Image 1 (cartoon, rainbow, N blue to C red):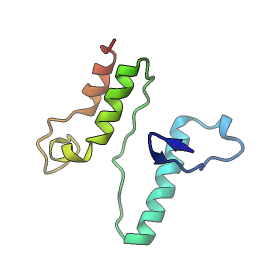
Image 2: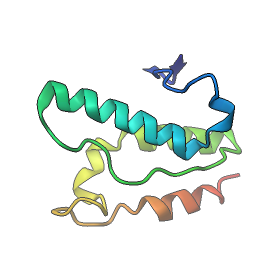
Image 3: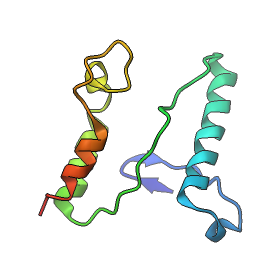
Image 4: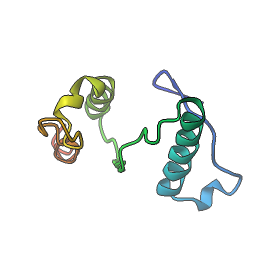
Length: 101
């Protein structure tokens, strides 16, 4: 399955319609973390949360794509970076999407 140029693994089972988005994300994060650990020995690759958000406009979708594309560049500003400045608050940013026409 392709999504915005990234390959998405099909991890869910035939009972996928019984699983919540949280369940699917948990499985995806667990699978990819375990594979990463096997390759590198590093313990963690994910931040603890994810955010469910209904994308209502093309402008909001473009904003989300830009946020994802520039995410690594903003790590020093990320609120979850222990040595960062804490200026990049994803919760506030998601709330601002509601204002995009």
